[in-house]
Image 1: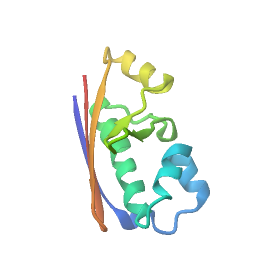
Image 2: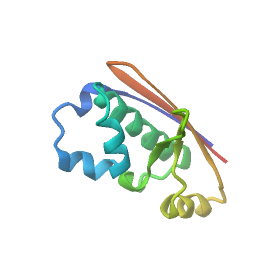
Image 3: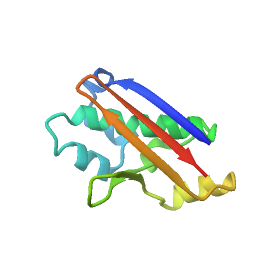
Image 4: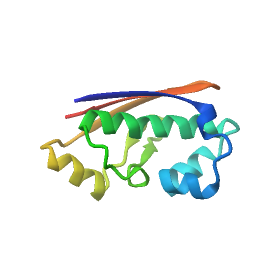
Length: 114
């Protein structure tokens, strides 16, 4: 199953800490805040979550429970935490692969679940 999303970075301008905490995990917030272009990173994380909604055809996902982490080389991956494992099991799925790309103005992500 496949999902893709594209968003404008400007969507996140002016968001409060409370709004970020409602959508992103603590680890995602800490990661994005390390960068000068942090809104591009937030936008990329958001695209992953929206693409996952599309891949799973499930609009009830809790975005702050879906977490994008990074390997030592910087490759993004979905944290297969208890929440996501249970969501995948409901559809007899076991894995999810992601790819994110972003610029100053926009971000996109693709999610493949098997």
